[in-house]
Every structure is written in C-alpha cells, then in structure tokens.
Length: 209
Image 1 (cartoon, helix red, strand yellow):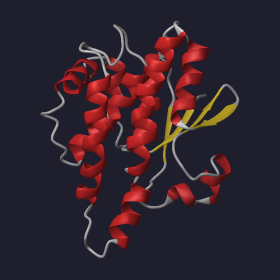
Image 2 (cartoon, rainbow, N blue to C red):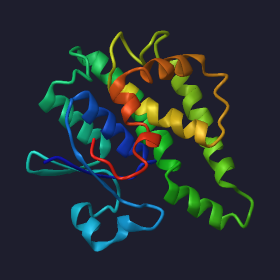
Image 3 (cartoon, rainbow, N blue to C red):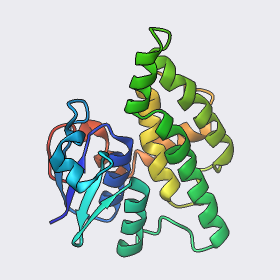
C-alpha cells in the first residue's frame, strides 16, 4: 500500500500527486490539515520531524521533500523526468529549483503569516504573495522554452514544479498576462490526465487516487 500524507493546497504535495499519477500508481491519501496545525502533532512529526508535507510511504520507505520524492519515483518507475544529457539535466533542475527553492519557500504559509503578523497591518497575504510570485515567475518566463513544455519536447521535473506555482499565482491574484510562455505551457500541461487529476479541486476531500 502506498500512502501519501498531504494537504490539498500544498504545492509540494501537488508535485508528488502529479508524479504518482504519471507513474500510474494508486495510493491512499491521508490529509494533513495544515490550517488546523495537524503537521505539528506528534504522530506526524514522527513521520517528518520538519512538520511538513508531503510524506510518501512507499517501498518500505517514508520519504520527505517533494523534489527528492519525485526524483525517487523517476528513478524507480522510469518516468523520464530528467534528460539523459548532463547539461540538460542541470538545466531542468535549475528551472525546477527556480520555483521550488526560490519562489516557494518565501511564499510558504508559515513565512507569509509571520510577515503579515509582524507588519502591524502594513502587509497583506495577497500583497506578500504577489511581491514574490510575480518576479519569480517573470524570471522563469525568460528561462523556459518557447513550446509546450518548460524544457525540450517532453514533460520534465520543471513542468511538475510549474503547475502548482501557476495555481498559487492565480489563487493570489498575480497578473499572468506578461507571462505568455508559462501560461501556454500550463494550459498544455492541464490536458495531461495525471496533471489534471492532481489539481487541488480534485483532491480537496479525502480520496484514494
């Protein structure tokens, strides 16, 4: 049995759901309510001392950190998410990390809530998110290919990171009109069944994928 401890709106969980779908795997979804603080409960901390989602129980392992999980699935299930050429692999990882390690951490709800609370009313959640998501995606717009995928002619790790970030951008009212490449790539990716099935609106209630 594969078990995924996740939260429906978590970008990191969203990435892993896409990869699981691409692998054609079935899993039991075990929601962790981040708003209610379930990630800080002892039972969850025993699985991930960082108090984060996702945690993927698979192959006798309990894996954490979404990029590490996706690369594990890529390596063990042959998803082809990273090119064979070393230089192209480095480029795909750079695109993925531009989202997962640059935009995502500062827009994590813990960070944003802390900033808003300490600002004395000077910062709103929407303002904080827009201030970091918009320039981060603008940089990514200049880095991706002018095609249906972020890099090359196939779905890669970079695309798996892009999809949840576009969801977040729309959620927080980021203007995507200056980002035609990313919007086009996102629209194409939305037609991929595994991507569509991983959308937060499809997994808001406890389900088994």
